[in-house]
Image 1 (spheres, rainbow, N blue to C red):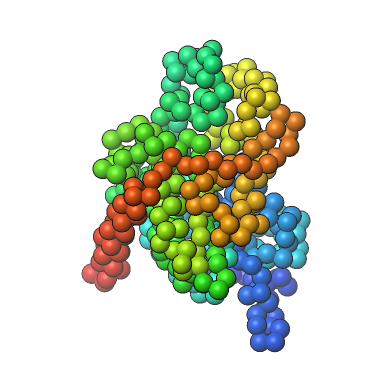
Image 2 (cartoon, one colour):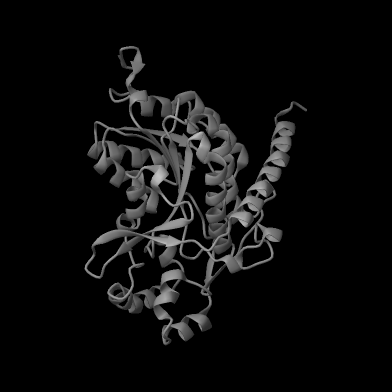
Length: 365
């Protein structure tokens, strides 16, 4: 069941001096802070983003939207230890379960009058399998840098169907976040003071792995790539439909980041052999950010931009030089607005069916 873990976490999150109600000229202090909601905030890119945002502005209110509340609680404590003037709260949400998403949105709407930034960062790549033949073929070819930068043709995943009846990667990476946005529209759409949606996409988002006839990629073997291309399409459609309402959307790619998920793709002995090569490749390609801190560069950069100034057809890439200097570059996405709008309309139809099912499940038997 969703919650801000009503009693335990309510005491933990709001029981100290940082969260006590304080009023200045009738306005709660918490409402004066910019509010940033981040899904998947307790590890990897999400955790690095939290740390970096508070280094930029420790007067923010960060809301960590996570499914593991114990882990999220530890993350919150660590962030507040380093930034005692910040406000950090928790909400339990599992974006692979639509009931959890809807309940989380209700709790968020009770706590905030608006959201300034919504980072759609949570995602999965379940059971990645390496195409050994393609790996060694590419390793000794002129395409080695492209292969490592994008993992194109290298990785397949074993997807499964969730309790909601969706492919897990699609529901987690795309549809769960879409429902969250739809539920939080009242907090996000303000013409006088725009809010931003910021998606964690990937260089692995390939048009060839996505089909409007199979948006969940149930018939393919690269659901992760398909889901990331789907977020790129959705980003374009959201800008087309919501910019006039004061809501802007952007997609970023963190680059090649070495995390527990990445290390699980190859046997340990291969990583021992490859790491020197990967560090060397940084001098020839900027995609090898390698650390979550570096990978969060574009996520932090977008935070500082006026949303109206960003190109809705561009993906903003975290990049790192061979000597470890971070910067951001823009890359035109391989998307067309007609396909993006059709995909958006398909999601709206899917949403209608989901809401009917949720209403039925909520009715007493």
